[in-house]
Amino acid sequence: MFFKAMPKMSYKADGKTIATKDIFRRVGLDRQINSTLALESYYISDGETPDIVANNIYGSSNYHWVLLTVNDIVNPHDEWPRREAELFDYTESKYGTGNALLDHHYRLDYRYVLTEDGSVVEYDAEKISTGEIKKVPVDSPIIVDYDAAKILSGEVRVVSNYDYELDLNQAKRQIFILKSDFLAQFVKNYQKLMA
Image (cartoon, rainbow, N blue to C red):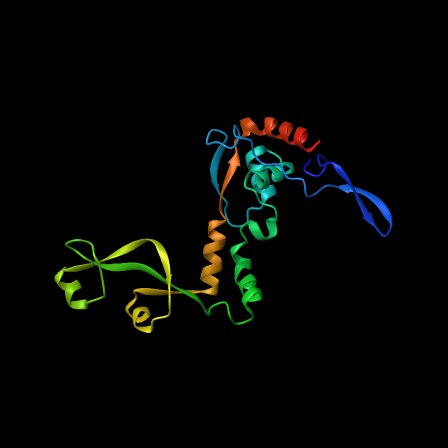
């Protein structure tokens, strides 16, 4: 369905004109469909592929392209989550053999603040034990420079290449699916726009 609806275009190669599918043509969601009424959140389980999810949601794997279009995924090889069993090998291929567990970056997950007013302060074991300062998580992890003392104290966490790729992969697991009630209209609009 996805490629069948694409119009043909003329392409010149070696002095000949060839008619081929216009794979550069893109269709997005219109405002009516791109709303919380037509979309719902979906978490991709390990090993689920677009065709498996489409089959589970729409009753046919032929609608895998709907999932990809709704989530603006052009390259499922890179933009769809990898199987966890394959992730370590992928990390090794990306960063080099033996480098998956090397440091990618350093992350500050929490800070020390004065209990009284919340002002950020440096780590002080004595003040922590008296309750004068406390440890609080940061809203979102902050990437920081290497600091051996802060790593040893646990204030800064080392994120390996593998952990980094795992976090990226996990973020890809949260997608949107088009509710089944809107599927027929979406397909009809897609065919109309591609013509």
